[in-house]
Amino acid sequence: MHTNMAPNFWQRIGVQNWFLKKEADCVAMATLSPDTVHKYIIEKFQDSITELSFAGRVIFYHEYIICFSPPDYNKFMDNNKGIFGFIIQEAVKSFYTILQEHKQQGKKITPSSNKWVFRFVSHPDYGPGDKSFIGKLLPGNSAPKQKDDSLRVTFIPRQTGIAQTFDIADELLKDFTFYSDGYYEIPYWQGLVAEESGTPIASKYFARFEIILPDKQYAGKKLEYFMKREQITVSGSEENSTQETIFKIPSEWVSTPHLLIRFDKTADKFMLSSFGEKTIINEIEIKNSDPATPKWTELPLNSRIVLNGIVTINIFKV
Image (cartoon, rainbow, N blue to C red; front, side, top):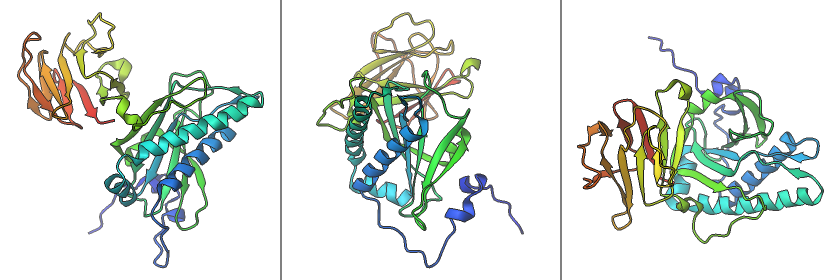
């Protein structure tokens, strides 16, 4: 019986046989080190300046997706948890040093976003020592954009060590595995000086939320919210308050207010209280309570929250 299997990521972009060919006599590269990852990120930043800049304007990627093989990624997280945060701190310092040099040459630094975003991911088709890079200009900017609906991916196969760059469609990112522990966000400083901190960068936020809405204007998109305070209120489109502790979801399907979410430092866990019509956490419905006397339910990280059966919220660690 012959079974048709869905083509993997590399087969779809037409380069499967070139750099993912299995070779019995191939000697795998040594396990990736923090120094290798650090230098690789800086190299990609410099490449982005070369690729995107023009007419005296210095333009560069603000989002960096770095992909490894699952074993390499897991080794970083199991044996050196937190090391990615420190790698990024040093990388961003180098970014600003490079930008300062361009500024001193009379060039205009043109940021396309007010933040840096780093995502460390894995791909099942990668082998030990493989790594790749995807750079993005973040949305909501006035800088020149890349080709519509496409990204640039640079892959370095372990067999040759020679970098190859391809255009890929955004939808191909579904083949990559994104981890909440591998997400980092840092403000962009106009003064081109990195903020000094003795703690990992990700500790500035308690959690990150991804929201999927049914409304037509948000079709195919996800909203993102970072929890900056120990306690927040999740509310709907009728919410009028603009306080930082209010997480307003622009949908009539969300009650006003709908949820109260807090981080319990003593227990090191998130807790949730529901006031809306219907709230489900990981397929279990939560009983409603009164805002004056909230009843708390534990909210595990990576949970899926569904409001009124239609609005989905995912909570991740940052």
